[in-house]
Length: 175
Image (cartoon, rainbow, N blue to C red):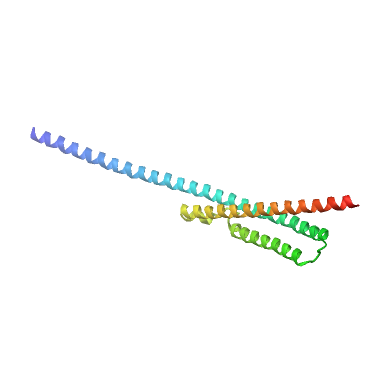
């Protein structure tokens, strides 16, 4: 009877060991699946962050284009103002036109910093998510800078256009 108890005990130990090994294998596989899920989630987060980076870079480029468009109008407005003021090719006109050119150069500099990120750069997928997020912060800062420059240029344009309208009104009234 002691032998049967020993055999049963040994069999139970072997079955427990097999069950334990099966549990270890299942845990290992589960960990592998969890790691794959984590990696996929990281990749999705990186893709989303890259997409957002690209969108922000596009917004910067659009703001710069709007700055350039406003700058063209501002040049015309300053030239018109010089005609009304009788100061064509004067130092004030040249100074104002140079300031407009400086704004365009500043806008081009902003766009140059953003241009590498306009297209989705899949090389950044290999880097850490923090690197992508840092670049997104930089793009957001550039967007704020470009927006401020555009608004300043548009305000200046509307002020000069208002002055030109007053001059036109005076000329029409005198005619």
